[in-house]
Length: 394
Image (cartoon, rainbow, N blue to C red):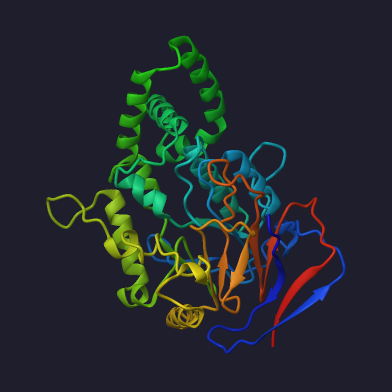
Protein backbone atom coordinates (compact mmCIF):
# COMPACT_ATOMS: atom_id res chain seq x y z
CA UNK A 1 0.00 0.00 0.00
CA UNK A 2 1.28 3.43 -0.82
CA UNK A 3 2.08 5.55 2.21
CA UNK A 4 1.13 9.20 2.38
CA UNK A 5 0.58 11.15 5.54
CA UNK A 6 0.43 14.85 6.30
CA UNK A 7 1.05 14.65 10.01
CA UNK A 8 0.89 18.33 10.87
CA UNK A 9 -1.06 20.89 8.91
CA UNK A 10 -1.42 24.37 10.45
CA UNK A 11 -4.54 25.96 9.02
CA UNK A 12 -5.39 29.56 8.13
CA UNK A 13 -8.56 31.40 9.06
CA UNK A 14 -11.59 30.70 6.82
CA UNK A 15 -11.62 32.21 3.33
CA UNK A 16 -8.04 33.50 3.52
CA UNK A 17 -5.74 32.95 0.55
CA UNK A 18 -3.48 29.96 1.08
CA UNK A 19 0.06 29.22 0.03
CA UNK A 20 1.68 25.93 0.91
CA UNK A 21 5.25 24.88 1.44
CA UNK A 22 6.35 21.33 2.23
CA UNK A 23 9.17 20.44 4.57
CA UNK A 24 10.44 17.19 6.01
CA UNK A 25 11.63 16.19 9.46
CA UNK A 26 13.87 13.25 10.21
CA UNK A 27 12.54 12.70 13.74
CA UNK A 28 10.26 9.81 14.67
CA UNK A 29 6.88 10.38 16.27
CA UNK A 30 3.99 8.39 17.70
CA UNK A 31 0.60 9.80 16.71
CA UNK A 32 -1.51 8.21 19.45
CA UNK A 33 -2.94 11.06 21.51
CA UNK A 34 -4.94 11.12 24.72
CA UNK A 35 -7.79 13.55 24.23
CA UNK A 36 -8.55 13.40 27.94
CA UNK A 37 -5.38 15.34 28.67
CA UNK A 38 -5.93 17.99 26.00
CA UNK A 39 -7.52 20.51 28.36
CA UNK A 40 -8.39 20.52 32.06
CA UNK A 41 -11.87 19.18 32.74
CA UNK A 42 -14.47 21.93 32.80
CA UNK A 43 -12.05 24.57 31.51
CA UNK A 44 -13.78 25.03 28.15
CA UNK A 45 -16.97 26.83 27.24
CA UNK A 46 -20.01 24.57 26.64
CA UNK A 47 -20.69 23.06 23.24
CA UNK A 48 -23.57 24.87 21.53
CA UNK A 49 -25.63 23.05 18.88
CA UNK A 50 -27.99 24.70 16.41
CA UNK A 51 -30.47 22.82 14.28
CA UNK A 52 -32.51 19.65 14.58
CA UNK A 53 -30.81 17.48 13.50
CA UNK A 54 -27.55 19.21 14.51
CA UNK A 55 -26.23 21.44 11.73
CA UNK A 56 -23.98 24.09 13.25
CA UNK A 57 -21.86 23.29 16.30
CA UNK A 58 -19.73 25.68 18.29
CA UNK A 59 -17.19 23.69 20.30
CA UNK A 60 -14.65 26.21 21.60
CA UNK A 61 -11.18 24.84 22.15
CA UNK A 62 -12.18 21.24 21.51
CA UNK A 63 -10.01 18.62 19.95
CA UNK A 64 -11.96 17.18 16.99
CA UNK A 65 -11.48 13.64 15.70
CA UNK A 66 -12.99 12.48 12.39
CA UNK A 67 -13.51 8.77 11.60
CA UNK A 68 -14.48 7.51 8.15
CA UNK A 69 -16.68 4.70 6.84
CA UNK A 70 -17.11 1.71 9.20
CA UNK A 71 -19.37 -0.64 7.23
CA UNK A 72 -20.44 -3.02 9.95
CA UNK A 73 -16.98 -3.94 11.27
CA UNK A 74 -17.14 -3.55 15.05
CA UNK A 75 -13.57 -4.75 15.65
CA UNK A 76 -12.04 -2.20 13.29
CA UNK A 77 -14.36 0.47 14.69
CA UNK A 78 -13.08 -0.13 18.20
CA UNK A 79 -9.49 -0.06 16.97
CA UNK A 80 -10.02 3.30 15.27
CA UNK A 81 -11.72 4.81 18.32
CA UNK A 82 -9.02 3.52 20.66
CA UNK A 83 -6.33 5.04 18.42
CA UNK A 84 -8.23 8.30 18.50
CA UNK A 85 -8.08 8.27 22.29
CA UNK A 86 -11.84 8.25 22.81
CA UNK A 87 -12.51 4.58 23.66
CA UNK A 88 -11.08 2.49 26.47
CA UNK A 89 -8.95 -0.52 25.49
CA UNK A 90 -10.24 -2.74 28.30
CA UNK A 91 -13.31 -3.96 26.42
CA UNK A 92 -15.67 -1.91 28.62
CA UNK A 93 -16.56 0.55 25.82
CA UNK A 94 -15.92 3.58 28.02
CA UNK A 95 -15.45 7.12 26.72
CA UNK A 96 -11.87 8.29 27.34
CA UNK A 97 -11.93 11.38 25.16
CA UNK A 98 -12.81 13.92 27.84
CA UNK A 99 -14.00 17.07 26.05
CA UNK A 100 -13.10 15.77 22.59
CA UNK A 101 -15.65 16.04 19.76
CA UNK A 102 -15.88 12.87 17.65
CA UNK A 103 -17.41 13.06 14.15
CA UNK A 104 -18.19 9.85 12.24
CA UNK A 105 -18.59 10.38 8.48
CA UNK A 106 -21.39 7.90 7.72
CA UNK A 107 -21.68 4.48 6.05
CA UNK A 108 -21.94 2.54 9.26
CA UNK A 109 -24.36 0.25 7.42
CA UNK A 110 -23.86 -2.58 4.89
CA UNK A 111 -20.93 -4.91 4.08
CA UNK A 112 -20.59 -6.13 7.69
CA UNK A 113 -22.35 -8.03 10.47
CA UNK A 114 -22.35 -5.54 13.35
CA UNK A 115 -24.08 -2.47 11.95
CA UNK A 116 -26.59 -1.97 14.75
CA UNK A 117 -23.93 -2.73 17.35
CA UNK A 118 -21.76 0.11 15.98
CA UNK A 119 -24.71 2.52 16.00
CA UNK A 120 -25.41 1.41 19.57
CA UNK A 121 -21.78 1.95 20.58
CA UNK A 122 -21.71 5.45 19.14
CA UNK A 123 -24.94 6.35 20.93
CA UNK A 124 -23.54 5.03 24.22
CA UNK A 125 -20.31 7.00 23.74
CA UNK A 126 -22.28 10.16 22.97
CA UNK A 127 -24.12 9.89 26.29
CA UNK A 128 -20.85 9.37 28.14
CA UNK A 129 -19.06 12.14 26.23
CA UNK A 130 -21.71 14.73 27.05
CA UNK A 131 -21.20 14.04 30.74
CA UNK A 132 -17.50 14.88 30.28
CA UNK A 133 -17.99 18.01 28.18
CA UNK A 134 -17.42 16.27 24.82
CA UNK A 135 -19.77 15.02 22.13
CA UNK A 136 -20.23 12.41 19.39
CA UNK A 137 -21.79 13.39 16.07
CA UNK A 138 -22.61 11.27 13.04
CA UNK A 139 -23.51 12.25 9.50
CA UNK A 140 -25.58 9.96 7.32
CA UNK A 141 -24.01 8.45 4.23
CA UNK A 142 -25.39 6.92 1.07
CA UNK A 143 -25.70 3.47 2.64
CA UNK A 144 -27.88 4.87 5.41
CA UNK A 145 -30.21 6.50 2.89
CA UNK A 146 -30.21 3.38 0.70
CA UNK A 147 -31.41 1.22 3.58
CA UNK A 148 -34.20 3.66 4.47
CA UNK A 149 -35.26 3.42 0.81
CA UNK A 150 -35.34 -0.38 1.14
CA UNK A 151 -32.25 -0.95 -1.00
CA UNK A 152 -30.58 -3.94 0.67
CA UNK A 153 -28.17 -4.89 -2.14
CA UNK A 154 -25.08 -4.56 0.04
CA UNK A 155 -26.41 -6.19 3.21
CA UNK A 156 -24.42 -9.20 4.41
CA UNK A 157 -26.22 -12.31 5.63
CA UNK A 158 -25.01 -11.51 9.13
CA UNK A 159 -26.54 -8.06 8.78
CA UNK A 160 -29.97 -9.56 8.21
CA UNK A 161 -29.41 -11.89 11.16
CA UNK A 162 -28.50 -8.96 13.41
CA UNK A 163 -31.73 -7.18 12.42
CA UNK A 164 -33.75 -10.24 13.31
CA UNK A 165 -31.96 -10.60 16.65
CA UNK A 166 -32.26 -6.90 17.46
CA UNK A 167 -35.97 -6.79 16.67
CA UNK A 168 -36.53 -9.72 19.01
CA UNK A 169 -34.34 -8.11 21.68
CA UNK A 170 -36.20 -4.83 21.33
CA UNK A 171 -39.60 -6.54 21.55
CA UNK A 172 -38.61 -8.44 24.70
CA UNK A 173 -37.03 -5.45 26.43
CA UNK A 174 -38.87 -3.72 29.26
CA UNK A 175 -36.63 -0.65 28.99
CA UNK A 176 -37.30 2.51 27.03
CA UNK A 177 -35.80 2.95 23.57
CA UNK A 178 -32.78 4.95 24.75
CA UNK A 179 -31.63 2.31 27.21
CA UNK A 180 -32.52 -0.59 24.93
CA UNK A 181 -30.65 0.79 21.94
CA UNK A 182 -27.54 1.91 23.83
CA UNK A 183 -27.36 -1.50 25.52
CA UNK A 184 -27.43 -3.58 22.33
CA UNK A 185 -23.66 -3.45 21.81
CA UNK A 186 -23.16 -5.17 25.18
CA UNK A 187 -25.46 -8.10 24.45
CA UNK A 188 -25.13 -8.49 20.68
CA UNK A 189 -22.10 -10.81 20.79
CA UNK A 190 -23.78 -13.34 23.07
CA UNK A 191 -26.86 -13.23 20.86
CA UNK A 192 -24.69 -13.89 17.80
CA UNK A 193 -23.17 -16.96 19.46
CA UNK A 194 -26.60 -18.30 20.36
CA UNK A 195 -27.88 -17.70 16.83
CA UNK A 196 -24.85 -19.45 15.27
CA UNK A 197 -25.62 -22.52 17.35
CA UNK A 198 -29.25 -22.31 16.29
CA UNK A 199 -28.25 -22.02 12.62
CA UNK A 200 -26.00 -25.05 12.90
CA UNK A 201 -28.87 -27.11 14.22
CA UNK A 202 -31.08 -26.00 11.34
CA UNK A 203 -28.50 -26.65 8.67
CA UNK A 204 -26.64 -24.36 6.22
CA UNK A 205 -29.69 -23.26 4.21
CA UNK A 206 -31.99 -21.73 6.75
CA UNK A 207 -34.21 -19.88 4.29
CA UNK A 208 -36.89 -19.24 6.88
CA UNK A 209 -34.44 -17.38 9.08
CA UNK A 210 -33.14 -15.37 6.13
CA UNK A 211 -36.65 -14.33 5.19
CA UNK A 212 -37.24 -13.35 8.80
CA UNK A 213 -34.10 -11.19 8.69
CA UNK A 214 -35.21 -9.38 5.54
CA UNK A 215 -38.61 -8.65 7.06
CA UNK A 216 -36.99 -7.44 10.28
CA UNK A 217 -34.67 -5.10 8.39
CA UNK A 218 -37.59 -3.70 6.43
CA UNK A 219 -39.50 -3.01 9.64
CA UNK A 220 -36.53 -1.37 11.37
CA UNK A 221 -35.26 0.81 8.52
CA UNK A 222 -38.39 1.82 6.63
CA UNK A 223 -39.34 5.50 7.05
CA UNK A 224 -40.76 5.78 10.55
CA UNK A 225 -39.10 2.53 11.67
CA UNK A 226 -37.11 2.43 14.90
CA UNK A 227 -33.68 2.51 13.29
CA UNK A 228 -34.72 4.93 10.55
CA UNK A 229 -35.80 7.31 13.33
CA UNK A 230 -32.46 6.76 15.01
CA UNK A 231 -30.67 7.71 11.78
CA UNK A 232 -32.97 10.74 11.52
CA UNK A 233 -31.19 12.20 14.55
CA UNK A 234 -28.11 12.75 12.36
CA UNK A 235 -27.54 15.35 9.62
CA UNK A 236 -26.11 14.89 6.15
CA UNK A 237 -24.04 18.07 6.58
CA UNK A 238 -22.47 19.19 9.84
CA UNK A 239 -20.33 22.24 10.54
CA UNK A 240 -18.19 22.13 13.68
CA UNK A 241 -16.38 25.39 14.31
CA UNK A 242 -14.67 26.20 10.98
CA UNK A 243 -14.89 22.67 9.55
CA UNK A 244 -17.58 21.11 7.36
CA UNK A 245 -18.24 17.37 7.54
CA UNK A 246 -20.31 15.37 5.06
CA UNK A 247 -20.17 11.92 3.56
CA UNK A 248 -19.79 12.62 -0.15
CA UNK A 249 -19.20 16.32 -0.61
CA UNK A 250 -20.94 19.67 -0.37
CA UNK A 251 -21.38 21.74 -3.56
CA UNK A 252 -22.38 25.38 -4.13
CA UNK A 253 -25.94 24.53 -5.17
CA UNK A 254 -26.39 22.56 -1.93
CA UNK A 255 -25.46 25.65 0.07
CA UNK A 256 -27.83 27.77 -2.03
CA UNK A 257 -30.62 25.31 -1.27
CA UNK A 258 -29.88 25.55 2.45
CA UNK A 259 -27.88 23.19 4.64
CA UNK A 260 -30.39 23.24 7.49
CA UNK A 261 -33.20 22.74 4.98
CA UNK A 262 -31.51 19.63 3.54
CA UNK A 263 -30.87 18.18 6.98
CA UNK A 264 -34.48 18.70 8.03
CA UNK A 265 -35.86 17.21 4.81
CA UNK A 266 -33.76 14.06 5.18
CA UNK A 267 -34.66 13.76 8.86
CA UNK A 268 -38.39 14.19 8.20
CA UNK A 269 -38.26 11.60 5.42
CA UNK A 270 -36.53 9.08 7.66
CA UNK A 271 -39.08 9.69 10.39
CA UNK A 272 -41.87 8.99 7.91
CA UNK A 273 -43.25 12.50 8.16
CA UNK A 274 -45.16 13.94 5.25
CA UNK A 275 -46.93 17.21 4.55
CA UNK A 276 -49.86 15.27 3.11
CA UNK A 277 -51.39 11.83 3.40
CA UNK A 278 -49.00 10.27 0.89
CA UNK A 279 -45.63 8.67 1.42
CA UNK A 280 -42.86 11.04 2.53
CA UNK A 281 -40.97 12.47 -0.40
CA UNK A 282 -37.35 11.34 -0.83
CA UNK A 283 -35.09 14.43 -0.52
CA UNK A 284 -33.43 14.26 -3.94
CA UNK A 285 -30.80 16.99 -3.62
CA UNK A 286 -29.27 15.35 -0.55
CA UNK A 287 -29.71 11.64 -1.23
CA UNK A 288 -30.20 10.96 -4.94
CA UNK A 289 -27.97 11.46 -7.96
CA UNK A 290 -24.22 11.54 -8.55
CA UNK A 291 -23.94 15.14 -7.30
CA UNK A 292 -26.07 14.74 -4.16
CA UNK A 293 -24.48 15.30 -0.77
CA UNK A 294 -24.15 11.61 0.10
CA UNK A 295 -23.13 10.35 -3.38
CA UNK A 296 -20.80 13.11 -4.65
CA UNK A 297 -17.23 11.94 -5.36
CA UNK A 298 -15.92 15.12 -6.98
CA UNK A 299 -13.44 15.85 -4.20
CA UNK A 300 -12.51 12.29 -3.24
CA UNK A 301 -11.55 10.78 -6.61
CA UNK A 302 -8.32 11.40 -8.45
CA UNK A 303 -8.64 14.13 -11.06
CA UNK A 304 -7.61 11.71 -13.81
CA UNK A 305 -10.84 9.80 -13.11
CA UNK A 306 -12.98 12.89 -13.59
CA UNK A 307 -13.63 13.18 -17.31
CA UNK A 308 -15.58 16.44 -17.14
CA UNK A 309 -13.41 18.28 -14.63
CA UNK A 310 -9.82 19.40 -14.22
CA UNK A 311 -7.94 20.18 -11.04
CA UNK A 312 -8.41 23.96 -11.26
CA UNK A 313 -12.15 23.54 -11.83
CA UNK A 314 -12.56 21.23 -8.85
CA UNK A 315 -10.49 23.52 -6.64
CA UNK A 316 -12.59 26.49 -7.72
CA UNK A 317 -15.83 24.66 -6.90
CA UNK A 318 -14.46 23.62 -3.52
CA UNK A 319 -13.30 27.14 -2.65
CA UNK A 320 -16.66 28.60 -3.66
CA UNK A 321 -18.41 26.11 -1.41
CA UNK A 322 -16.15 26.78 1.57
CA UNK A 323 -16.55 30.52 1.22
CA UNK A 324 -20.32 30.14 1.06
CA UNK A 325 -20.39 28.32 4.41
CA UNK A 326 -17.50 30.33 5.89
CA UNK A 327 -15.35 27.25 6.47
CA UNK A 328 -11.63 26.64 6.22
CA UNK A 329 -11.81 23.00 5.08
CA UNK A 330 -14.13 20.08 4.40
CA UNK A 331 -13.88 16.46 5.57
CA UNK A 332 -15.48 13.66 3.52
CA UNK A 333 -15.69 9.87 3.45
CA UNK A 334 -17.42 7.68 0.83
CA UNK A 335 -14.46 6.85 -1.45
CA UNK A 336 -11.77 4.52 -0.04
CA UNK A 337 -8.28 6.04 -0.12
CA UNK A 338 -5.68 3.25 -0.58
CA UNK A 339 -2.95 5.73 0.41
CA UNK A 340 -4.67 6.42 3.74
CA UNK A 341 -6.18 9.61 5.11
CA UNK A 342 -4.99 12.51 2.97
CA UNK A 343 -5.73 16.06 1.92
CA UNK A 344 -5.89 17.70 -1.49
CA UNK A 345 -6.55 21.04 -3.19
CA UNK A 346 -4.29 23.04 -0.88
CA UNK A 347 -5.55 20.91 1.99
CA UNK A 348 -9.04 22.38 1.61
CA UNK A 349 -10.41 18.83 1.54
CA UNK A 350 -9.57 15.87 3.74
CA UNK A 351 -10.54 12.34 2.61
CA UNK A 352 -10.85 10.00 5.63
CA UNK A 353 -12.41 6.80 4.26
CA UNK A 354 -9.55 4.27 4.33
CA UNK A 355 -11.74 1.22 3.66
CA UNK A 356 -11.01 -0.19 7.12
CA UNK A 357 -13.96 -2.60 7.17
CA UNK A 358 -13.28 -6.25 6.43
CA UNK A 359 -16.09 -5.96 3.90
CA UNK A 360 -14.20 -3.29 1.94
CA UNK A 361 -10.36 -3.20 1.98
CA UNK A 362 -9.71 -4.42 5.53
CA UNK A 363 -7.03 -1.75 5.72
CA UNK A 364 -5.33 -0.33 8.78
CA UNK A 365 -7.61 2.16 10.56
CA UNK A 366 -6.62 5.82 10.45
CA UNK A 367 -8.37 8.91 11.75
CA UNK A 368 -8.02 12.66 11.35
CA UNK A 369 -7.30 14.86 14.34
CA UNK A 370 -7.95 18.62 14.40
CA UNK A 371 -6.42 20.69 17.19
CA UNK A 372 -6.78 24.44 16.94
CA UNK A 373 -5.13 25.42 13.65
CA UNK A 374 -3.50 22.04 13.02
CA UNK A 375 -4.74 18.86 11.39
CA UNK A 376 -2.92 15.55 11.26
CA UNK A 377 -3.42 11.84 10.74
CA UNK A 378 -3.44 9.37 13.62
CA UNK A 379 -2.26 5.86 12.87
CA UNK A 380 -1.47 2.93 15.13
CA UNK A 381 0.63 3.83 18.18
CA UNK A 382 3.04 1.09 17.08
CA UNK A 383 3.94 3.12 14.01
CA UNK A 384 6.78 5.60 14.01
CA UNK A 385 8.00 7.62 11.09
CA UNK A 386 11.60 8.10 10.00
CA UNK A 387 10.47 11.04 7.89
CA UNK A 388 7.52 13.27 8.60
CA UNK A 389 5.92 15.14 5.72
CA UNK A 390 4.87 18.55 6.99
CA UNK A 391 2.76 21.14 5.20
CA UNK A 392 2.83 24.69 6.52
CA UNK A 393 0.56 27.54 5.46
CA UNK A 394 2.35 30.87 5.07
